[in-house]
Length: 232
Image 1 (cartoon, rainbow, N blue to C red):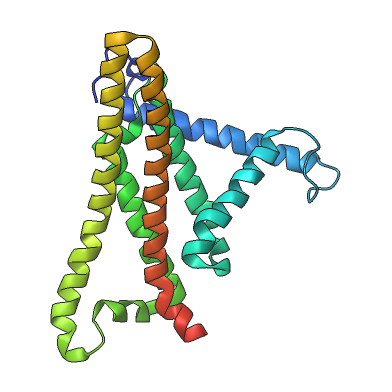
Image 2 (spheres, rainbow, N blue to C red):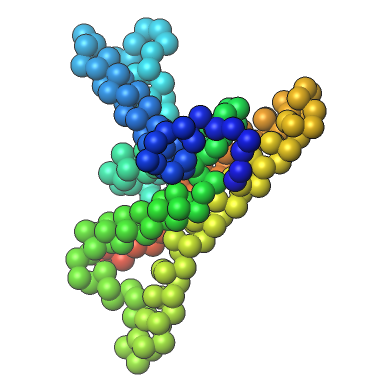
């Protein structure tokens, strides 16, 4: 998405979307490090801080993520996936919201960023599938009966290869359109209407982060379901 002016365009050697994504990653790492330091300095790490703190903010976020996303999709045993997917959601969300600030363009409106996130999701759910079931993970690509394996295997491979592309396009196109509309109305009015579209942009940013992460978790559930059934 083209902006008249962006701060990240002044970063040397890096494309604008890469510089923006790097900035978000650094901010999140700093925030997590400070929250971790607060936990380390607490008298009792199990007891929350008395007032508002960065540690409390992260703990509320992680607890909410576990309750609203992990457990409905993967159940209580899905807690082991919390660190990666909570980080993924937060990275996408902060990138989306950063684009609402004048002078910034969201890295998630660039196809290189969203395709990278889609490929990362693809790699991780297949990794968790192999980790849960070993080589037998490949069996679910072949269908329920062996004589249908060539057809089912082909369809499954196509389905899995399309997943990172659809994740990529859904996020990129929505963020591109959302921030393009915001730019147009901001340039035309500068007052009341941009506030409305800022609120709408915030809503869209949250929803798109949620949808991307939700689908990624669904893929994890599909990849590990055979192992869970055998285990039970």
